[in-house]
Length: 282
Image (cartoon, rainbow, N blue to C red; front, side, top):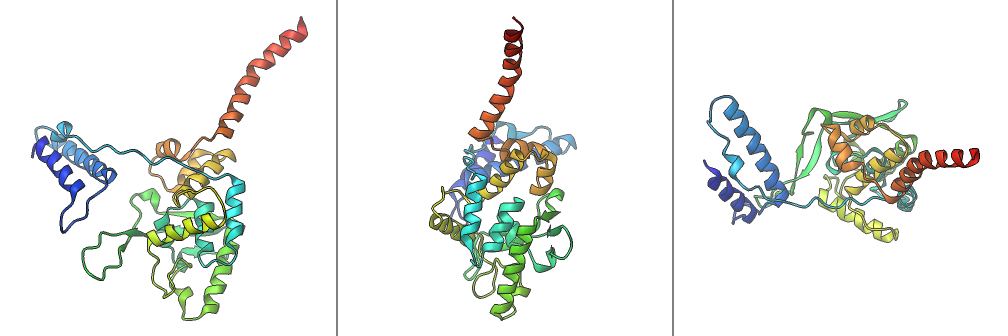
């Protein structure tokens, strides 16, 4: 296989065919990164003489712009939910920074609401699947991709209360639905499709008259608020389940204009303090 073959593979994946859906440039680029590492290792182990991926052109993609809410806006959204059947799921997303699939994968056995602090264990995820057969649900169960993805996350008191309230509502609804998961379920008790979960979020954001953000931006919002609260990046990394702290720093510590303004004032004060001291001494 040479660089031309790899470029041809990229093109086929981007185009798709009658049996396979077209992949997004981001997905193909990630695949290219995996191929590059595999070929690199093959060269290191003397299986190949050269890494032909060096000459291939991985698709480029633009990372989605990060949007976040302020603490006031997030509070307004959570307050708007009242008894919405997905309220507990959105509380968990907003206050832990978990990924969508991680919240959808939670089971009651993963939640410890009796101890202090309450905790949630992340051990499985619900992901969007490529539908190949008639009747496929369009989702699949998976596990965290890295060792840091397997983690125990502390829950604050209000989030634990929201989960308990949701469990009481589920138990009151009968049909044993509370035994199936923490509340991110469709009406018939089956897992809620990830895209449907995102759709419901967008609908509630609009009803709450808040600036539109993606569901994944709740994760960004959590990290940004943690930064503004002075939480050490290492703790944020552990809560978000990032394999490397560089990912936490580069992607999820979104700096908004207010944070920049605070930084500007703090740096300027170091200079102006000397100016005031010199002026008072003259």
